[in-house]
Length: 231
Image 1 (cartoon, rainbow, N blue to C red):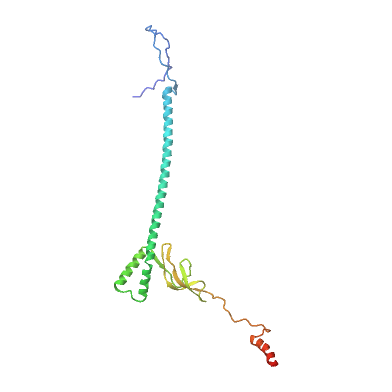
Image 2: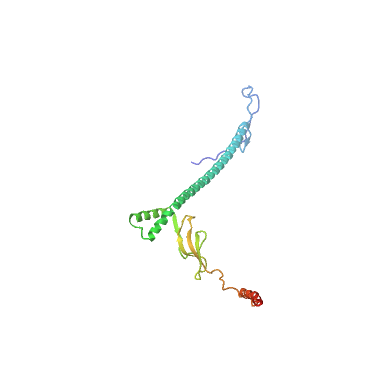
């Protein structure tokens, strides 16, 4: 079955007579109808004001929510930066303590190296020494300083100085005591003997005396001879 087309709405007729023609009685006044917008009844003034107030309230709530969200994001960023800074300072303090402990053990490593050079590092003492060196290496200790390296005053300390024609610049000719570092921190510079490519200006000999210079002995003879002739 096909539905019949909907009938178009006809004109609206309102009876404003105060006396009902059918009953003859006085009619009660009817409230005025709300004006229509687009065929629909508009809200009463109080309801319209309430609707506007609700819209303003929602706008204020949204603005307050956005402000609180921005505050929370700012606080979160500050906390992340604070935590990162605290972690960095904690790690820096930890590395500083480790470096101080390693520095206090450097004389022990020097004794171990001297014992190794004299073939005295044997038996149980060798096992303990190797274990100590592995532990200190695991904590980040590094040794440096080799003969033939370019001299660097930041990590080398020159205890001896000489000149050589076989080098092009200041070179560590010999390592007297190896150096140690922990990370970027130099715990002890390497003590070395430095060789440079050219020596100081050498004196080739005493300057020649002028031809008219008088020797001291001759001057004395010139003074003494007249005295001798006068006797």
